[in-house]
Image (cartoon, rainbow, N blue to C red):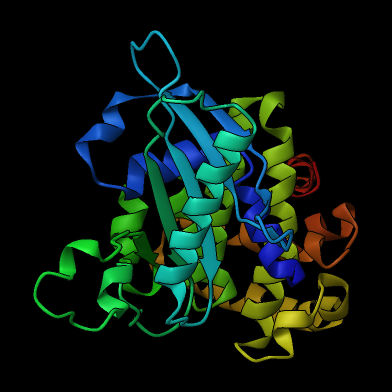
Amino acid sequence: MGIHDCSYKQLFSFSVMVADLLRGFVGERWIDDLDFDTLERKNGGYVSDDLSEREDDIIWRVKWKGRDRWMYVYLLIEFQTKHDWTMPIRVMNYVSLLYQDLVKTGEIPPGDALPPVLPMVIYRGDTPWRTPLDVRALIQEPPPGLSKYLPSLRYLLLEEVRMSAAELEKMSNLVAEVFRIELSDNLKASIPPFMSFLKWTEKAGPEQDHLRRAVLVWYKRAQLPAKLIGDNEVAKEIVLEEVEPMLSEKVEEWSKALREEGRAEGLAEGKAEGLRVVASRLLTSGMDATKVAEVTGLPVSEVLMIRAVLNP
């Protein structure tokens, strides 16, 4: 798995991200019956009966509200960038392995009902998803009487390519901000949702420091290079250090464009926000805070605050 996928999956190792994912993108009434304070990360590695290991994706469990004992909902989150027609089979296998593990470890006592499972696939490709959502759709039409024996298991698909940036912006949701960043087609468009995410972690206090670092790593290693260079195979493997010279070369161009936009709008706050964006880019490129203040005209204290947010 590439470093970009790892840094993306790292974001969903935080309970607040999983809670926002469920609240904002499942769209089912039963979500209101979940006690999100009980969200708990589960191990994703299973060993099947033939002893072949596979590393599963992120799995969480959560209690239902007002229940005397655990009623589990497990989330199997797949991160796909390409179509895979076997996805329904894979999801069915993952759920089966999960149930097997629960029984083997004694987490589900003999005779107890198995917990419900919500399998989710987050698709980040550029074209609409074409694979069926239920494994039954992959099976040939059976003779009369055989259909009752066919397996059926459906997964929930989230397609970034079909999401509306305007609707995501209205949601006030951390996962929506991540999707907005991914959907943005240039660096300038990606900065507002990125800064919104960082501001939320700052307001949340020290308990979200790890999440802030995780989103910084993901943005710098995956999003920033891609937005600078464009969507090609080389960009997907480049780390921030390799594009810093290019970033520095673009600073003057960005600064001029943003200043002109601020003058055209005639809004002091719009201009100030543009200068803050320039300052963040200069700081990201490694320029000294004092020099950034000279270039942008912002107070040194404000530049230092921006740097603190970028480098917690």
